[in-house]
Image 1 (cartoon, helix red, strand yellow):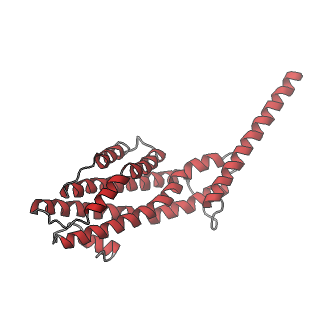
Image 2 (image 1 turned 90 degrees about the vertical axis):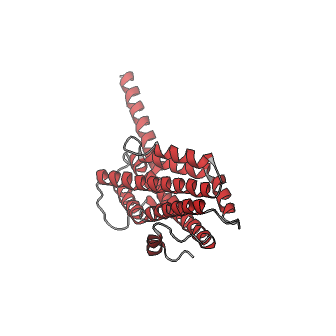
Image 3 (image 1 turned 180 degrees about the vertical axis):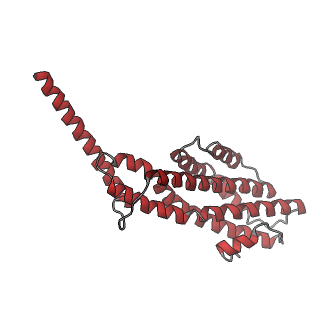
Length: 237
């Protein structure tokens, strides 16, 4: 009888711990804006995960495009920074279905840290007054065209991310206490993307404006995708 009582006590303690963890995690989720859903929304978890993976993959592709174009632009300016190439290679390794959305988002955050010095070096170089050679101008135009595609692709993900945030709210509000911890894991990549992507797009657009201004100063006119930039991002001059 004593053994049975110990088992019951152990089960009760375990249940109490599980409920406490779920309550704490839910509080964290609520504090980040995922506690309540705006209206009644039915969310299919499978579809949610698929959409999350797709949008994360698109943001990853956009960041790779940024880095590859930045490497080309820096080369045109006579600069070389291994961190940009290494960051691009690290993100390439996360492409495809073998990496989870969490892994991809973590890689995105790391790439921003590892290329911070290169970004400063690039911005400083754009203020130079020396005229580029014809070959360097052609390379700079090529890099600019690719940079434009990166900005546009990442900008296009914002609406989807916002919709997934709302779906994440619905999932969290409908989950029972035992599901809360799992729900946090499901919506975590979207939460992170919702905090970094808008800022990335704003920074990318600002940098693109500087790049286009440099192109104008250097009389670089044949820029691939410049029409797409104007249509999607407005006047950058």
